[in-house]
Length: 350
Image (spheres, helix red, strand yellow):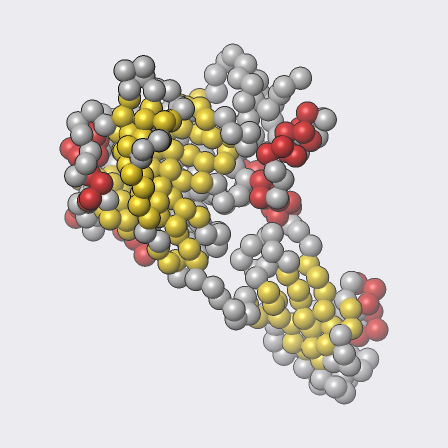
């Protein structure tokens, strides 16, 4: 299949969905990450039950009515952070999943342990950071198969497109009926990226192959998935740390939105009772006169604040979210590899 898509004259609709909570990182959810057992696979009835409270249901019944027997059904999901299917660097592989997964489709899922089943799309298209779109092959263990020849492509991705045949979607070819678990006909169930509060837009659509084997998109339905704004404090840490001498209360809290995203600035506020002088915080805390030497700035008599920098995870995500495609490519050509693997021609343009 040609990865280049012709979309002129395409019918486009849009229907937004509000997300109220972040999908927690769990052992079940992690199985759908890159190079994990169920990457690009539908979920089983057990998976559906386990993750049910975090799934986003999208009504695709109107689209399925337009799906012809020779057509393809597509689900396009963007990356919300840095994703690389090549590297084995723990700094990358330890990051939570950066994209949404299709857990169930029109009442169908996967049958675990069934050798004859094929719970994955006919095609999986990846788009890299330079805008190249290409097909990736995924084996039965969820591993991305790396070609032996050089590619001249990047393994860092900006989106994935799952492409299913009409027979898969309408008749469940290679899939398993999981309606007993609650998956409904005419519905698409997405698992949002675990651990992420970043809004994104998923797209579902219908495509077909032209006589020249070019992929042509006929119908597109955009679904912006938006997290509700939360203006309250992200979380509150600490408590009543009593000084040995004065009995003063120490309150430490995280403010801003840094608790949910490593890219947004965070500020730690530390407040003391007005009479707390020369206190010592239990369990290795700092005396008041030493706060300034550890990055704390005094706001007033009783309040100090400290800006929190990026973690290693945040630095990796920064590459994907802040660097433009041009800047990233230029830096790579100049010899900055960001700890990224260069195997079989990926990320190696020397």
